[in-house]
Structure formats: structure tokens, C-alpha cells
Length: 198
Image 1: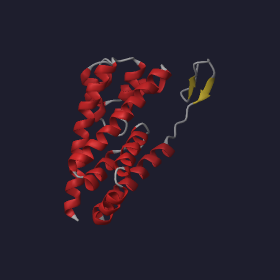
Image 2 (image 1 turned 120 degrees about the vertical axis):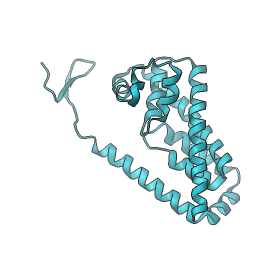
Image 3 (image 1 turned 45 degrees about the horizontal axis):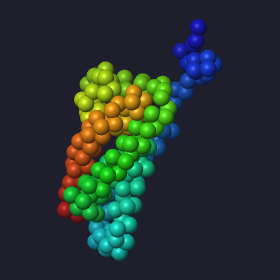
Image 4 (image 1 turned 90 degrees about the vertical axis):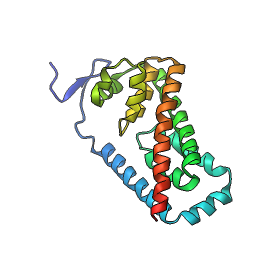
């Protein structure tokens, strides 16, 4: 019989379960603080930021979309980056660039799920989702849309779970487009409003 601190691995080996997740939590908290401070700094110095964006032209949106794609498929929250897009590009274009990045990140997560095909960690994260979302079928539109609204990783869990369960790519796409589009509009508009405070 295994002790409470031990788990069996797929190969049948017994390993010690790590109870401390503080390094990951610390990185998450620090990234949220740093990106929030960056958003405030950009809002206070918007004139310089706008002139810089004008100077680099089409590269600015490409950098934004690339950052959203890379960070969106990582544990680092990207809502502040969306607010920054609202400050720099305005609420509509900022939301559009963020939405494109979110969609690309969603596909990355989906195909990661397809490749790993194992639910070990993601199934436990799915079970922890609030409001009973984890009990919904993986291909349920309610799970695919509302699960993305759960802060600190809900969208990432939904993306990987969708891939592992091979949710129809069409259903995955339209539900991701709806949920990420609404979130992008909300945070980009919030960033744009933040610009008016400074």
C-alpha cells in the first residue's frame, strides 16, 4: 500500500509526490504583478508607446500576436497583455490582435492534447473547475466556452482536454472563437479605459 505522499507512475514505480508548488505559484504571481505594472507604465507613457508603434509599423501587431500565442499556451496569464493592446492599438484593433493570438494559442493547446493523449494532470485540473464544469463532457459547448472563463488556466485546461478527447475541430474552433473574442473585447476595452485615467 502506498503512503499518502507517494503515487504510482504509469510504469508502476513509486515516486514521492511534491507537496510544494510554490515555485510555480511564485512565477505566476510575479508575472501578473510585472505585467500589471507594465500596463500602468504604458498607460502613463502612451504618447511614447504610440510613436514607437507608429515607427515599427506592421511589426507591432505581429509582435503582439506572437506574444499572445506564446504566452497563451503557457501558464502565464495574458489578460494584461490584452489590456496593453487596448492601450496601444485601441479597443477594436487591440481586441482583434489579442483574439488572433488567443486563437493560435488555443490550437497549440489542442494539438498538444492530441499528441500527449494522456489525461493524468489535466483530468485532475479539470475536476477542480468551479460550478461543476469538470463534470460536463469534454465536447460540451458549455464546457468549451465557460471553462475558458475560469481564471488562472481554465482556457489552457480546456484546450488540452479538447485535444486529448479529440473534440471536433469545428466545435473547438467556434467555441474558442466565441469565448476568446468576448474576453479580448472586455480586456482591450478595459485597457483603453485605463489609458483615459492617466
